[in-house]
Image 1: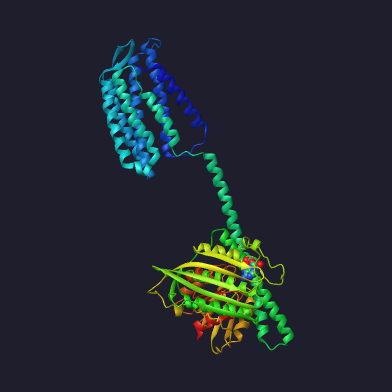
Image 2: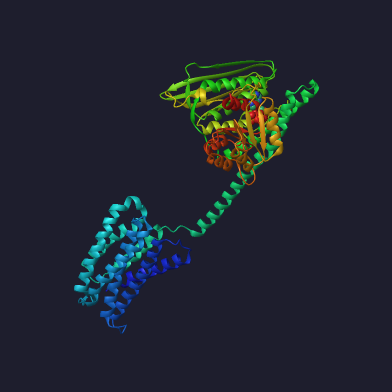
Length: 600
Ligand code: ADP
């Protein structure tokens, strides 16, 4: 009826598991509850086995028949609890857990009854007692039953459940060994020891990581998420807050510039425009870098016309050169496919950055802008290079070039810049899985080369000539007879927009809220276009647009006119249902494109 050494050893291990398991915090999972039941059942089995031994040696004055039967019942219960455990870890749906428990417990209650009545004999072997008889054989038959169920569950679910099945597998193998040992020496019952060992294995495999650590990590993650959100909100607000007054400054100075003013004043107005442009560039740069650092900058791929991007880059660079005596040479490989698939805006942004730097840091000489290509299967590798005869970069500075807020032109501190451009460029190129390298000789010039893989589109799904409306012209045309409704809660912004549109002889009507805009449309006022601000109190632009669309027969194009200009915003507003997007401060060429698109 058991070996004292095994019993002592099992009890020791069981005690240790209980102390460790219950002294730590636990996750309230169903499988953990089953595990606790297994531990408790194992303790009872150990106590009963000790009692059996004490009774057999007449130390404990209790009927050994009763104790042995109780022991057999709890041994069977342990087997059923293990089968419940195997089922629970195999089933993903936790609604089924209760059902599994009920079914197995009813089965256990029914099957355990014969253990109370079937005969048990007490035999002596090597001076030690052991139990035998129909009750024991009956328990062996039931145990074979749940062993088979466990084997089937292990075979079916091992791949999905993984290491949590290990204790069950160990149980199956060790059970077979225990039966063999029992056959050789019937006084050695290793079952209890085996159950303790399985309980010990389970302690390491159940889903019970250090709960305190998980809780601390969760709190830290929550705090970091909150801080990150606060930073994003702050940036978005800052962008809005800075752009709103900037819009007025740029708008009014542009208007002034176009008036008949004396040349001396014109020069100063030009300076105001240029300073505002720099400020805008800084705001955009800081927003971009923060988005990149927060992993929030997405690469939005779509089909685009390479030639259009190239032409736009050439025009923009020319505009930036103004009257600098620079020989600007540009070339692109004619074999570059017409339509490519990539993030057109980002491709343009990175190339424009290095082109703008070349213009900034080259006083005289040349700028060479070249795009070559290698085609392999459906991928076109663009090799974009920009070489200049500018001030160059010292060897020791080349490594730090792509670090944010690094600027080196100590000789010429009058050149405006933030030191953010190349940091953003590098991150963007990496996000697009490309590469950027720089070669430079201080005092002679620099060469930046970017390699970018773009997919080739043979059959474009849209007319790309049609879908890019942005032109670079800033000439003003006559739109007499056209009416535009401008909606903005900020009076100054309304005034700026109206002033800009006045030049085209457009008739404008100004309202200060979404409600007023709805009222105008409902009372049958006719407009050709609506410019709608987004961030307005009580009813924002998006809600106003949704309300407008509910009005029967409403078909006026609506352009979002917003200071919320962080990257990705255009796509967001187009998705919301706006027909176009115009960022504040309003750029004349972009306004022209929109007016041409909707009013001509
Ligand atoms: P920014 O131009 O706003 O200062 P960038 O990140 O674009 O910031 O450039 C970082 C620094 O690298 C510049 O301040 C300049 O010293 C140097 N640099 C960049 N491009 C060139 C170039 N083409 N020629 C010489 N120096 C350059």
